[in-house]
Amino acid sequence: MSQFETVLYPTNNDEQGFLRVEELSATGAAATECMRVQVAAYSKQFENNPSYPHRLPIGATAGHFNVYDSDVVRQRRQRMQQFIDAGHTYVGARVTDDEGNVQGEDSLAGFIKFGPSRGWLQKLGVLSPNMFIGDLAVIPDRQNNAIGSTLLHAATGFGGFDPRRKLALHGFKGSSVNNWFLELGFEAKSKAAIEDVEIGSYKLPQTLYVSEQGLTIGGLRQRLEDRHPSLAKATFLA
Image (cartoon, rainbow, N blue to C red; front, side, top):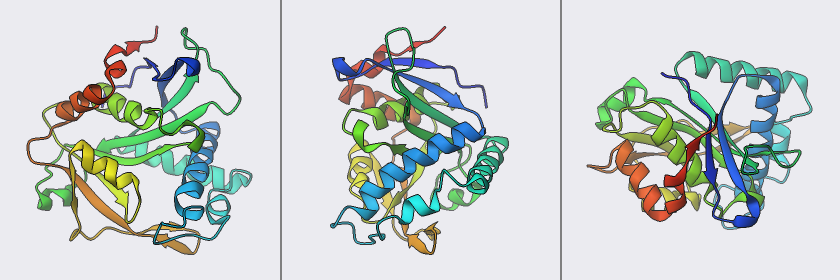
């Protein structure tokens, strides 16, 4: 997989400047930032959301992704490295000015992890090497500003995959985010056996989503640009 080049995106909100989308290495700092994003996003989605059917107790996510525990950070960093060694890429989005200079202390607004699909997906017609989205999270304060779409656009446009191939991802059962996947052209494979995500002693069930027949990586990128024309204005940051 070719190295991901840093890309600068204009945001939909003029007051929020630009988004610098860049590859993340398996460092302690990156592991901590990614876990901070997940704590914020998961707490809102799975703890503070009374409509979520598999609701977690308040504090469960922060206890699991404990950014103040050096062992937890080290384990996360090691896991990131294992995925990177297997051909996956972590990419983060930071709010910047028009020259790509970061704004704010906790600057990581969201991140995505993507890589080649695993062999067992071939049984479902998702032949390797397609793109598999392993993680996609945005902090609540930055949601509804197309940051998730920006990260997905960066992965499909600059992730080094053949645009003629297809995509797959996991969605949490009962999550409102799944409606977005369906709108983009993914379809649920509810009969596929998917492992639950463990958050401490609790479990979040998942569903496999694959791109509908005819929808390719390049096609999804175009759909994202049709929804958010500013995505087509991305430029490589020197």
